[in-house]
Amino acid sequence: MKWEGNRESDNVEDRRGAGGGGGFPVFGGRGIGIGTIVIALLGGWIFGINPLTLLGMLSGGGAPAQVQQAPAQRPPADDTMARFVSTVLADTEDVWGDIFKKGGSQYAQPRLVLFDGRTPTACGTGQAAMGPFYCPADQKVYIDLSFYRTLKNQLGAPGDFAQAYVVAHEVGHHVQNLLGISGKVDQMRGRVSQTEYNQLSVRLELQADCFAGVWAHHAQDARHILEQGDVEEAMNAAAKIGDDALQRASGGAVVPDSFTHGSSAQRQRWFQNGLQNGSVKGCDTFSARTL
Image (tube, rainbow, N blue to C red; front, side, top):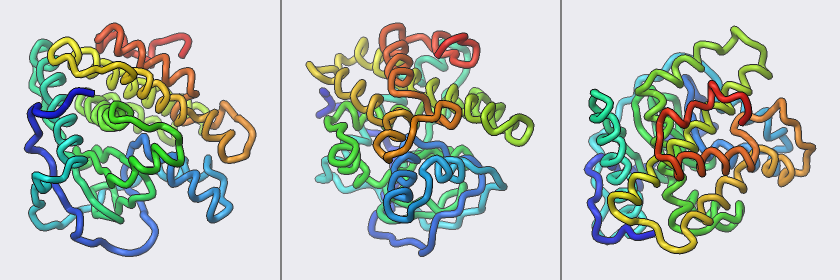
């Protein structure tokens, strides 16, 4: 991926080295993340807990918490990985800012928080084992950069464009929040069965995958960021974090009714849809008859 020399975002908070509270993370509000699967797998491996149960817990509801924190620092200039995610975030700002402007509205840029270990958020305590996630209550994306080692070594999805896809997916959740989509899904909690709510969650996640593809489409058109093998890296990452792939990896049976993020094939299909068409309307997973 061609990113060196491109603009870096000013919306990055570096909380690394700031420490954090102890204990297991407890969430109020919906913390939506591509990385929720990581703690689910780790919980299954270490504590003997069904990963699907943990996935449900991590997307649980409740009132947003109030967070008191000191002003965040900018990441150091010689930190390559921090510069990389700052550049990817800036690229998403440019793409979505243009899309919203053409639609007659203004894009409210999210902030990206770098942390290590754990950190307070408006959705509760964020912990590294969760992987990256988006908190709609404070409109921030949170990531412990050690997740990228997990993505490469444990999930088998290496590559800088796979890493960019992770950030773009979480920004996709921010776009859903701005458009009121995620709020409408959250309102259905408790009004429908768990199976039906899981199906809504799958459509939400697949749309975020599609939005990640939309970003890549427009970034490529404007700045020619893609190099040979980049698309394959993202498609591989999408395959590795499909619900069916994760259930097989955890040693359990594949149970489609329990899916919350979509199968490997579905995640690949919707990312590819956004990448090829670059259309927000084309990412309407909620109206799609088949996923």
